[in-house]
Image (cartoon, rainbow, N blue to C red):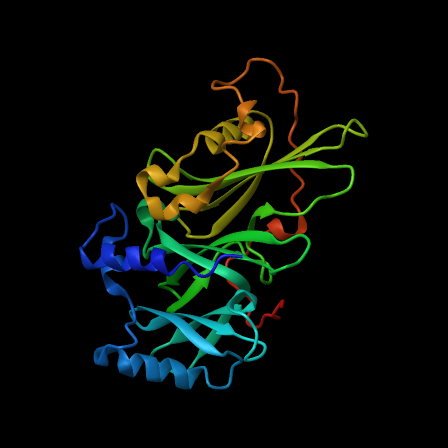
Length: 307
């Protein structure tokens, strides 16, 4: 368990202050800012958010990001005054700044808010913040999920992507399964137009008990509708995604996105050929997605907290 990456937020704030530009969505980025809890100019926003959340369960407000008439808010809930910070359960909320309306988007642990992404491509109306988070702390098989936080122009509220309950796109699952050797890799990928997608690859080796299985998925956003997409890949499409995952280095373009690549140095990626093979691949991907790999366009109105 690693504490919330305040350093990453500091880098992001510095970039915004310096007027750092992206080819996509620059006006929307300029419209966004993180609240300074010590700045009197932001005091009315802090008061508004606090009053709006007064009926909800939380111990402290960690971050408030404002985009036009809505705020993205990160709160932490501590079980007891003696509990240690790693056990805090975090909730991300969308809080209206026009009326006292609040909606929980997800619950999780160890959130890492990273930098802006361009999942919406050239038609993106608002920037999307990358977010990694875990489902538990100190458990046997913690999972790490990826989503983005974005302002919905249509709904005048913040939203998250690829959600099913509190689970977004699964990028890593720890722990062992008896009789199965599991290898994993994932990466943020940029296509030729500058649009982001996320690729994940899980390889299960059953030690000869049955054929190996590969689960290869691509998470993206339709650039025309803005709706998220989840695709299970097979054949040449899966082979291409495997290569792209294993060769991806998002940190070269943006160090704050370094966490969106893992498994590239594993034996799994060492076996991937540099160029497409002409023969039928030895490992044919199984594309039946796990239960938590089906996205939806907007989060549920009420979520249960997993602690």
